[in-house]
Image (cartoon, rainbow, N blue to C red; front, side, top):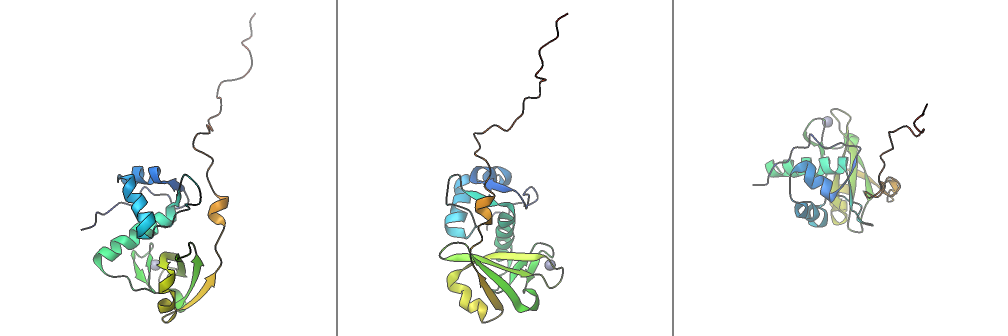
Length: 168
Ligand SMILES: [Zn+2]
């Protein structure tokens, strides 16, 4: 039985390193690396450190836990709002290529309007397109432009006032 991880401490709009993910979830970093390499967790691995978006991590863990209970249909996404699998509203979804073999399927939840997304294999795209209408988009450079500053750069500012002590 797959271990359940709480997604409560994951911030959707934060970008995490592998170390930070393992820290937040309390799992081994090798587990996180395995998810990225073999499990379909989206990460920017074009440079070190690897970066994972909070929302990708949440979606990955949500889908993983759903998968443990019931199989998510290829053309269904896990809605974080409903906490249930949903078919994209209007049977319309976007596919954004992320790696040569996988990408992100995105659609709106028909119940609550939440933007849902999940990682799908490029090879599964045709099967998904048989069920719903999928618009294929080019890779989004968003991650590249949001890379955090290197962790060895200290951003702390000197709090002490700069002026010299006034001596009578
Ligand atoms: Zn929903």
